[in-house]
Length: 467
Image (cartoon, rainbow, N blue to C red; front, side, top):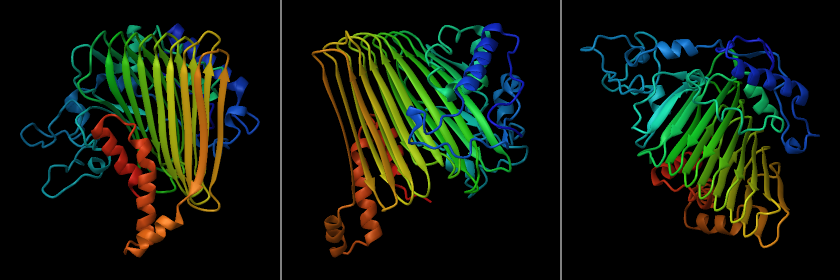
């Protein structure tokens, strides 16, 4: 049991460059400390429950992950003729690591709980994590797509060129903390001109338990020149409503010339969990990055995206939607840096806030001195469902160049009573009418998701009533 800073044994302490990164992360977090309301980037998001001393970091299991075979990953330990689990390179058919004798997925009439929760309703390469730790093995990826556990990529030095060099930990205290515990996560490299045939999905599933788990995930994604891929993150929780834990996630993403990445995320954590995530993207010429995040869980959920458009004709879309009630705070923070001429960015964020919850949007567009003929657009809209709901918005433009096109806007409002009355007059109940209007309001943001199957999946979550 302990707080955010604990002495834990991690794999690779004997690797000098890795341990140096961890030590630097620990020192930087010690210098920066937890953000407070006086910290400009965190002025609207109060960090509740993170000064606690009862957080638990589970021991490393990297070596065990490396040794597990596809058959052992199932966990059911049946003989081939008796097992109904059908290994597909993803462990058990339901995508979950069962204890011996617990798999009943193929019994007549049985639907496994984890199958219900973790099923991806579209064809994909699925990578499973549980409480921040990988459940081996990886699926079989096509030629030209290299995926491995992050520590394996450290051993082979595949990750050495970029790991810890994309995200600036001096500007992000939780990224510094993530550095200090760096161990779990994936390394993904899509080789030159390779187009991945279906989405790559990383699911992290957390179940309720007595301990307040604290876990860190670090993912490194590299798309070489001309490569194309879709990457989906899904943070899922099942169990008691009062379960409390802390997920700290960092993605470092590098896009080569003319590379294209669509990056989608569903944050559906526990009602009392804390989820803080940072994605930093560095883009070469003619590359395209599209990010969409749907947040509908957590006590505090912060999704931060920073994009560096370093070369000409690089473009980025950073879109999001959030839905919450109760006492939650959901924070969407963006920072788009136009560092070269003829770069493009757009942002659309829409939120629905009820109860005593708070929505936060901080969006920044920076146009460097020589970044002429650049265009950057940003728009945030929010729907307030109660008198006690709150929206805090801070749009920013920093323009140091002429001959650019930039815009930003923010608006908030309530449900239209005239529209509600019209629907009620035609026999639609008031609560159903409200849900119809909310669904229609979010549709503009969800339409930004280009893959129709992923869009339908996210829409189902966005339109589902919150528990």
